[in-house]
Image 1 (cartoon, helix red, strand yellow):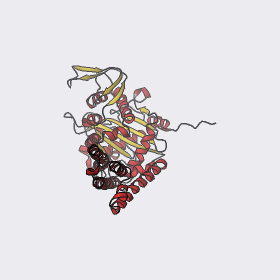
Image 2 (cartoon, rainbow, N blue to C red; image 1 turned 90 degrees about the horizontal axis):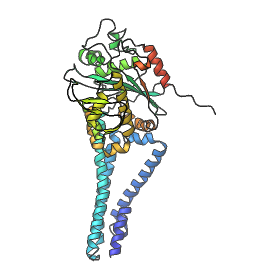
Image 3 (cartoon, rainbow, N blue to C red; image 1 turned 60 degrees about the horizontal axis):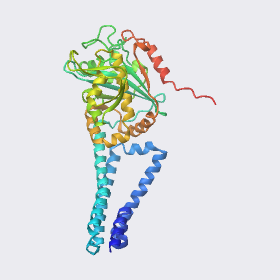
Length: 435
């Protein structure tokens, strides 16, 4: 009887339902077998589809409906396996097994039940958590097609400090991604660009046809620079963008997006706004970030920069969220352009290190932090496409185009035609070598 007991336990684990078909309730066994074979067949089909069309599979599992369906299926199988395992223990009849084998068989069966049912149960919990995360961060709007073969995304990072009139972005860049190859180009825009043009049809651009604040000034304190556009539209002229909030954006974001289009000459489909006050939480949730520090960067203990707590020394440094935020934002002793380069470096490091495996293993923390610090109008329907595209992006070097004096850009008197020509040249695909 001991050998029979072991066989039934193993059969129940390898092919749930088979133990009942051989030695118990055949009706229950056939139900379990059909359920098990259906799951195996479905997994094989999904795997084959992923090999040839990964975007389709990723699209299903990066939207709330697909995740809720996956959660329901996993919960069903967890319950089914639980019932079959308990029933198998009844078929074994431990009293008839060898006395020394009874506790081992019982413990082994319980362990297998915990592994199988626990894994399925956790998968269901994970899927429902992911669904909630997607609903809180991503919108349900329509997808946008690529323009000239590219997706262009505006990245904004800022905070509403006590000394500021509303939120004012400190970090502004456009990430342009080749829709086929995944090649990414980062265009970093300094916050102090002046006479900023707006794209055609811009609501705020109608008020400043010659560039932002170029004739009669603007309606915010601190200078009519690029980062002031957000504040003016958000706090002073929200009526210029009456549909922004309903579309998952805000007046400040929309105005800044139109300005970024005017600067770069690109059509920008989506935006991502990161609250820098919570940015450190996201990095901590990912387990930190590795940065190759090029020059010494100070960390201060007071707002007047009188005391240096310590320095980031040149070389590879593993930073937690607090120190990564200091590294990206510190400007004392360096220029705004040095800071832009560090922020670009931080973006590239996060892109390289935020692997799917890393995100999945730390999902709860990443999801909680992201839902608090990230706002975007990227629709759920595009997530599968972008996740697949990101896997290609990670395999290629990121091209950087900082709009800084070293590249011929004078922020006080910028030549926007020259800037657009420089960007267009950077985005031009490399010629295919002739054989």
